[in-house]
Image (cartoon, rainbow over all chains, first blue to last red):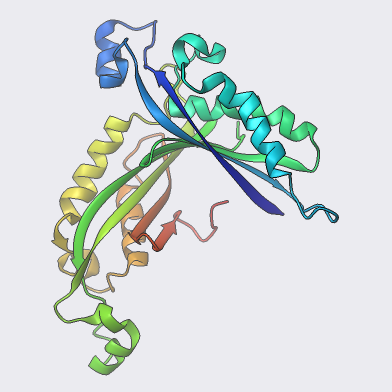
Length: 139
Length: 140
């Protein structure tokens, strides 16, 4: 089995806020990230798929195809957007890096599986070079 | 849902690779430049990976402020701008980055309550790095 990773970048705004909590508790828990005017990051997304190289093409998946899937399913919706205000899954969940990794997994799992030959192995989202979250499909 | 959160930290320290179990010649042959009697130093980069369920109230595996405070107290104040060989950890073992990686894992492993320390990765330079997950099974 081979693991194959495609990297992509996008930029977006967000803030952390739990509407069930008081302003004090939000500020104590989330600090600067609770600023309701939002802030932003240059995110790096790494999508890893696993599979066996096709005997004819030598590909696990066609990287151009994977690039297009990431663009259609993620970048077109997240890039240069306010995650809390403009991306449906974050209307009810906080767009932390952890939740972004899980949400991107949910967006990509079906198209990657439907293509046949490969399965989604890992989604890693870098918020900065020194902070990242990863989801591997574990419940 | 189980997710993994990683934060990287930076500290600078000196060390010397040397063991009393070998002769001076054997130390030089084994450790090369790293056996320089006066030591040398690195800018270390340490990745701390925490695994656990995402708290629905916070969207987090662990609050980064909590993680930062633990790493600052247990790792940064202990190792930053220090000579690793003078730390009791390295009184009887060589201060290789393999051993440093295991030591940092052992120091941090019980510090996070229900969240689990999943992996420590120590980068000695951009080209040399070491990982430890607390057992003999390598991570995926």
